[in-house]
Image (cartoon, rainbow, N blue to C red; front, top):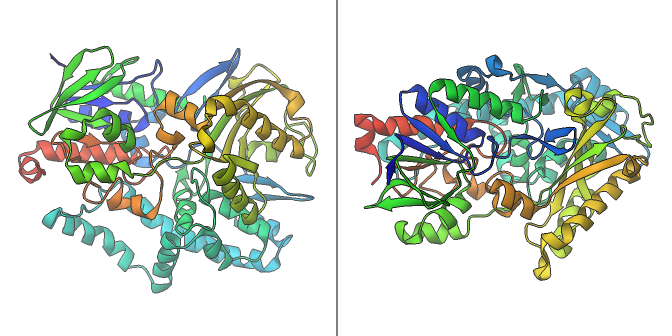
Length: 537
């Protein structure tokens, strides 16, 4: 077995790179092992048709933690974000709704649907921001680990102090957002179906569930705790696509001394005497290291890369029921021209083209999309978010041409009746295009090329089991100290020396960098004398 280094990172996604950077900065010799021929995991920019490049999986940025950006000095390596003028544009049956652009502008827009909702909006905005601030505060902190003794009690007290110090009405908002369905939560604030849909959409992004599902309000909250260029709650476009983020991270890692190996897929974690001792590559080569940090999802790690005999039986049983599958179908399309929407006509570049274009006009529509997918495999009327990145970054396509990113829900991770996504993917893609064309009649005719990622494609290409963009569902039983399962919420595993640093750990999915940051700090703590004494054996 080849002695590789002090630490091996399995998977070169953004969290793996963040973890590698912090370990290398502390003086460790680190090597990242990436299965694909490009670094970045699901946060990549790739050419999908001649002359057309796009963020082929993750497609927009907000949740990346400012501390990670600053520590890695990503701005020095080409990282730049363009803010959205407005956040989202919703084409409705005979109208439209634009969300964002400031409180006053949003109120004026809501007033067209409900004066009461317009008046309510500032209080709603303040309530969400109050809870989002709590999430920001704990995102870069290790959750208190069940059974972790005094250290866990101190962590719980520290993280709970901020919550308990909030006014009572704010604590009630926290409780509502963690346990209620998105519909129940939004019904308590708004009366207009269109306004509820504007906020309810965030509750189903990457969430194979209905807005009526208890706990779906939390997913809504998860999507608003980010910031762009210091502006809280904003979303933006990474110049050069999402791959520009991981390319910048790779440069930071290289400067810190990290070795990055592409086309180096890992087959198995090697364990001896209850300790991780290295990895076996698909090629058959074995690499030794006392620290292994896995930036793959828990389902992939513990069901495929670690032998069950190396894990406690109860852990194996519980990981067998760890839920994955985000109901996501992802498509990238090369366009000859911009979509011309019936409710807001025009093929010339306009404000709404630069926003997230959301086809999901009501909570009832979103609920039907989920129930359809459960019964037949995909939605008759899917939830679609379309981004047109070339409206703000013309480097991604030939002059005068455009790209559309289509992020679609709900599509069952596994089709019923034994059908395969290999046989259904083209029909599903055609159906999505038809749905967009109903709102923008020129859309289908303008398509030059397309790239399809069904849930099965996402699993095969990016290692996302069940096509789950979050590495595991963001449900109440799989959050915070219970992510991935209770007792192992502190980035450690039952195997000494094996850590988790991906989105299957706290604070969850999205391009945040937080799991990688937090895992690295726990690894470094375990290398200290005090840390080694407290590590679970």
